[in-house]
Image 1 (cartoon, rainbow, N blue to C red):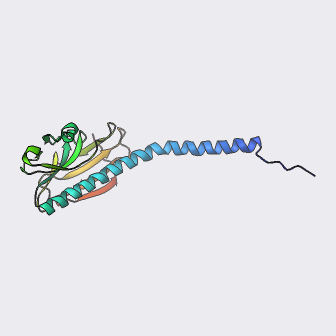
Image 2 (image 1 turned 120 degrees about the horizontal axis):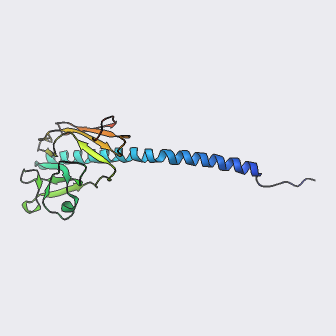
Length: 181
């Protein structure tokens, strides 16, 4: 009677390890590109939700609501916030503008409604419109609308685009060849 062997031969083990190594290498190689792609898409979709919220809040409260980028430390300390020209700087904030001046001033009754996290230093956000989006009671934008382009790296790969219309609606387009330069 022959004894049955249990286990793997050295050749079977080496082939299995080689296949697992190749699959792992492919997964790691593509994951950084996929992460950049997801980060850009998620950021613009979150911005779209905040723009939709601002528009709905303006119509439901019959007041002016502002979306802009402001200095993060001033937002966190609930101090007066002036909108920055560069949307890549600071945090994007949504606030009630009681003075109709586009500046968040808590002493005058302005209330911060939402704040988005700052974008990573390796990323950039460009907007072709004004330094702020101001929604009136009808939900329309009183400032110049435009297009947001999110660039997750300096190579201009995986750039995503979203357009904001005069009516206050945000349309996510996804991949774009536009750059943040």
